[in-house]
Length: 213
Ligand SMILES: [Zn+2]
Image (cartoon, rainbow, N blue to C red; front, side, top):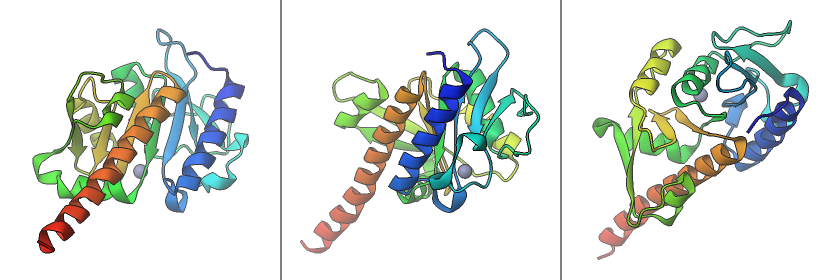
């Protein structure tokens, strides 16, 4: 799907408000982007600027950058340091939108399963939300160390991509999820986060159940 600049600004402001209401963008964290350029053209994408309260985001808080994360227009806005991860994901996957949010569930699971470097999700209906339709499907969501060096983190994310899994977890940090359009990226992210909340709740309940028996 091809978006105009105006559409990108409108869509990013709306989706940021929605995710902020879910509590997925706490303390001005997280960043969301949509690709402007055609897949065959040099990369340009619109991304939420650094340090903004996402509930109060406006169209003026969206910055358009190139593959090196340099603003393509004169702007006082600073793209977030994490914008380089968006750029690498666009180039590696050819996707149309990238969403990065921090939730308690994705942080807890990324730490609990860090030793094996992936989180396994099996046989859940919402795996279909990731576009995987086989019966009893199982997937492994990669978990990456939260390197302070963002270019290193971006390279590690790209090295660990699982082609059919449209997301990666960063240890005690958050998730990056993507899709061909904003609609698809949102569906992926919401499916992941539902399954993460399930997994955390299941672990808590099964422990309480075991203690009670
Ligand atoms: Zn982050």
